[in-house]
Length: 314
Image (tube, rainbow, N blue to C red; front, side, top):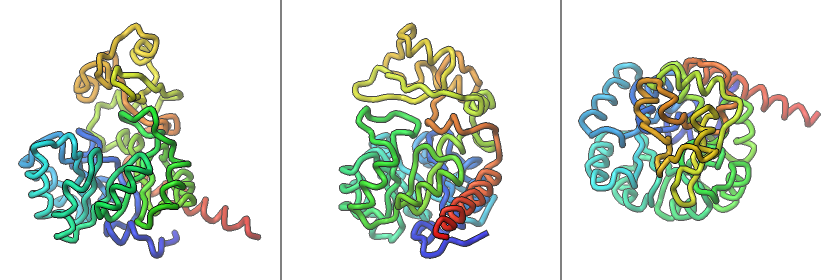
């Protein structure tokens, strides 16, 4: 297999491959993030869903599993009054940081003092420019194909990557709609130097979510873009009986992105009680695989596509 040269994402992370898992709350803990890092990717562990003490234990589990680097992620707006506490802990031991949902200028002065690279996740050109002005090392560019709550104005990745690449010089990681080497090659053609996979890793063997959730993603042929009852926001979910009921208006989500108790679906597999959040890429996932299989197949497929495109030159 070929090796990537002059890749700034690999420089900043120390990983073997520029492939990240999305640091989704409850999903991206030691089992998932550790498996991605152990396989040569850049595992990202979220630091929002639990307190610092438990997060520290999760980080220790990853270090026991692999000597490969991993990163920590801050959901800035969700951390609120815990932000300083989490940042204090992270800056004392992290080698790579990521953040989202909030202006990174809240944390960048302290991060810059340490020299730790921080990549901020954005969904628009305006957010990208503000993050670069704040001093971030790189950007995670998330298109509207991605899962989770998104603005009704969110542009899709194909356009957004090009728009941002024209205006900034920092390295870009592409997120949204990517599950394999074909998507990775497409993202690199548009200016990315790395990719983040949310739905693909959330449904992998090491993900802590219930098997029913994983299988629902693997079986998905259509996703729905649901109005969760929150102004100017949409939630992408697997199409099933519950989500179709919400789409028809038979079930009122009442501002709940999952239209029901998330933990009953996450922990107990009760997909009749809460919707299965996912990205558009759920339609490209056909089976549950290990993180190592996903990363190996992605890199093999990536170089196959790069070689195929290079052959067009004759």
